[in-house]
Length: 413
Image (tube, rainbow, N blue to C red; front, side, top):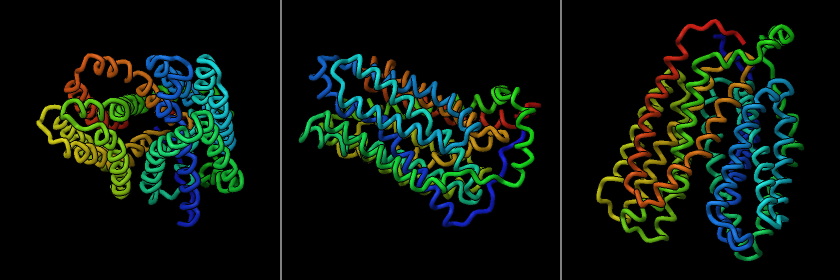
């Protein structure tokens, strides 16, 4: 298996500018994923919908995003990342405006699907730009910045939308979300010259072989390491979905945590995860240890999850444990992305990242169905035991990626 072509020599200033632009775009992606959940109380009354029906809107979003993410990798490899990114942002802005004008549940579902289309392009675009353009010595920091920007996007959604909904209504809140996306799109258009792929010298030879390899566009799917990465990210998405949607409430019930304090748990987790990503960027500078970093980090996170589920924890310590768990998960993030980088064959970055990261969308679409049922049955301890179990499986999955990558294969993409 041939590995992706090295990035050309670039200056620190060039890399910093590109990483910053990609990070801003990635913030919008995660921002869009949490447009609706913070507004559920308003949408429930406005559309006389149940929480199950509102939750299904999120399933629609991620189901569509999963499909588009897998397909957009091919589009990125063929047309380049920049036009695909601009289309994705335009679609997201349109979806947000559509949400704000919706008058029935069917319209909400339609625009949830449209938002999924927009969200589906980001990972193939982002990682193609970073892997192709950023110097190898700075890739770890690029991945950590990318992860931090996504975390900030999740934090931005409730911080911006809920106060606007309280003061001006939910429609104005979603319209403002569309304006944010439009502003980012305008910023990237102004800086579009920095979003062009800088082909490495060897790429000229690869380009001449395009016609010959066109019939083998799907050969990368025969590579075992690609599918091991896919399953790794599906499991990771389950962990993320549980923590975002259910773990704070489950901890509140188990340890008699006041609502205000339990609501802070997710914020603490995200902030500490962002801090962990900064440190993780330094660890990812050595690609040879990425599996060990992921394994140790998720092993520690699993211990904190078991502590929350099985130990008698004082209410004030619950946010602290969430923070420690978030920090461990954040440390793993850049090395997690390096797993995919090391498993990607030449000239297939968009396709591989599209398929692999579609596992994130599948996991986030499926996890609420299982863990939501556990919450309905008050299995709060089971939430954390299952969370720790999935984190433990992630440890073995990371090393299985390395084993699969070392398995001889004749596939050349």
